[in-house]
Figure 1: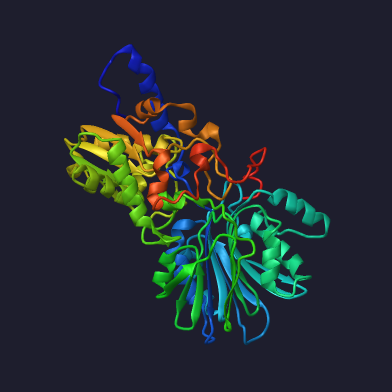
Figure 2 (figure 1 turned 120 degrees about the horizontal axis):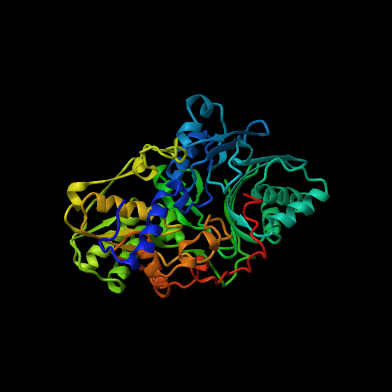
Length: 496
């Protein structure tokens, strides 16, 4: 436990708050922001099996969800029907040679998932497969609907029987219902999109078509790739690189793309001028080797670090990043400030999302299980520590404490995002205001609570610089300016 050096009465309350943060039982992952999902689809026009390729695509998207994984495939030249396998766990825990070999088919969709609290069960794993009068649909969804509860109730009263508690099933049912009247499956997807409100990137597999769709605001990313005679849909370009595919283009906000052996067909009838791409894809979610809507994620984080150095300079000996998303921003801070960049943390990459957490009273720290400090790198130095965000403050307090326990003379914390003040309703698990440390405390108070020597956030007015000056972003978690009117009550736990 590290307290301030002064013994005056004014410091006692600060020290008490700092101690309470460090001693709270919140686990390491509980203070980290998560995205909902990653989606991946493949269609091999030469008729080769795609399940192993989808496996590697999902492996590259593992950072987007670590609770469950699934693959559904169909054979466009064989018997009708879809083969699907999904379970709880990481991609390499769910799949092996035996179950992949049974997923024969030249068209398929895959999914990795992170859920909100209370819905981490196998029944909610994706892809979803629906058998209906027109055939079979397989669907993977990334995002969150605002009107899922109302639509679910409406569908239930007309005979729908739901097998899951996720909003993705609402979308699948709507597509199936619309297909009863629409001449093609892509039109049924478009018609279903007219009824749903919120954030979504969809990959839909029909017997002979692979369809991608993105909500009109473009909250979540989706792109198209190609390798020989195989086409792909993916949440991120890094998965295309992993399977040896070349990037074709991004799916535009509001666009429905249909991939068949006859070509790629585009329906842009739902496209609109106003977009609201999630800025946190660039700050944290996406892998640094991905590009989203023409902007490299790594470059975005470098720019964020440079902005921090301009707006929150400090005299220091070393700049370090909290792995992994903090590293590029730390390099940017170093480049702009001239302070040397270095590594201070060793991350245990073999700890899954659900490890056995230390019990109260045990000496093991859930932070130290995943992160340890290189004492030789920080001892006797003034350190600038760059991280992507502060949520509840528990993890930040523990990491600052680790650095000071390792001998750092000063720890100056810089955050490559503005302060979280509001919850997200579009597929990111940013909690309600009462759980956000910045919602009830000033920057100075947070600085004292986490035990830092100084604290600086990215200026919200400079967010657009991260993506080349574009202003069509969603920054509601920082500003409260939601691009779609949020629900009157927080329903995120009901449809997780």
